[in-house]
Length: 380
Ligand SMILES: Cc1cc2nc3c(=O)[nH]c(=O)nc-3n(C[C@H](O)[C@H](O)[C@H](O)COP(=O)(O)OP(=O)(O)OC[C@H]3O[C@@H](n4cnc5c(N)ncnc54)[C@H](O)[C@@H]3O)c2cc1C
Image (cartoon, rainbow, N blue to C red; front, side):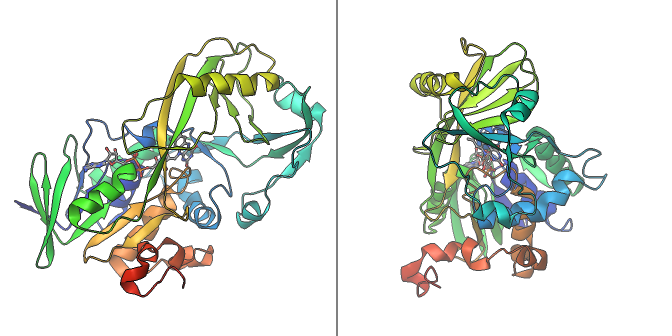
């Protein structure tokens, strides 16, 4: 049995970011079931930062972490993880033409402007405007270098002597006295603190510890690329009907997604051909190029709590900490969420700069889903 100070379950962006930011004097181990740390959601994202996406909690977390993403200290990364992209919203005749503005205005990045068709033609000549009534533009939507960010946290974790163990599944957790005994497929650990960063399997891991589930709902999202000669760069496009988005990618191709949110069991999820076909049908009227052949297709899980806000905080059992439910913004919010988690684990409070950014501690508290247990903090 190996004795450590913290066991982090899950090596995706949530797990490695919190492990990297814990004080270096702690003995921290990250255990990941797969042979690759980015096999699940972290490796399957669309790799963008959209200000305001996900609501107020995610806006605050994204804002707090923006410095790390855009202007990291040189030891963490020599380069920014963000690059300009922009987002065009094509408002279709008869649809509500204004994008939601409330969450956007919460974010210090969230400008939304109306643009004329001449501007659209210049920025994105591949867009077909025939069925479009008006267009809005969010200039501050950025590309997000996901692999680079994840690797920067892995390097930082290694500098801090964090042990990252792959092909190691947590199969049982038992509380004995003041510590958890964590049984994995390869080794046993004894630790006072377990951080549950198991993504779609967060409730499964909690169940193995006898901790109440929070009711995580993994939702499948599909993405695929289609060769589109002449489409190199420029803003991405979304329909006001929310039935697809299209993002220019390197190699003269568009990344397309139906923006599906099909609830599924936690699993190594695959795309369904029907979702791909229906996306092509929805997107084709907005794209001049013929969307003919699919180059690669995949699906991943976006994992939501019942109220759509993440769970960052202690469970009802001593030493069991939640960092799950990041929905569709888990990459862009990761730096802010990791620092928030470290503040709660080490100091017992949400850091001051998170509060200043408007983060409501009650909105991330896992105990809000434990109405019967602690007197209904959900209502509070
Ligand atoms: C198609 C798609 C597009 C997206 N686009 C964006 C985007 O543009 N921008 C953005 O910010 N976010 C985006 N997201 C969301 C983002 O990808 C996720 O919120 C984020 O990756 C969640 O990270 P995670 O570390 O919690 O989960 P994961 O990366 O899934 O990591 C959890 C890990 O825990 C491991 N694990 C589970 N159980 C155990 C166990 N018992 N023992 C050991 N290990 C275990 C799993 O193997 C897994 O590797 C997108 C998601 C999808 C699916």
